[in-house]
Length: 97
Image (cartoon, rainbow, N blue to C red; front, side):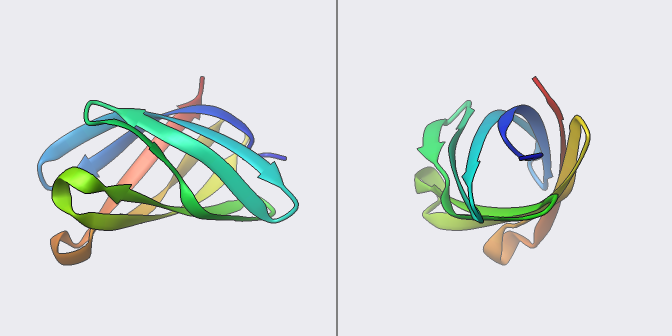
């Protein structure tokens, strides 16, 4: 699938750009994987794929919140938005590693 692989992401948060490595694997319409960044590694949850569109959640334990991601893959790029709860929404983009 188009979403499978490792991605270098930049999430543009109100606290500045946050870089992470995202690893995704799809099976049918389900996506599993992990995100690794300065705060550690977390498993993605509720991952879904529909064509080139992908959604997933992570639990940011240090902030006691769930962050929901919605993105679209176009070749070797991915971009979309992340819901940051009370902090609003942030845009992200990335490239295939």
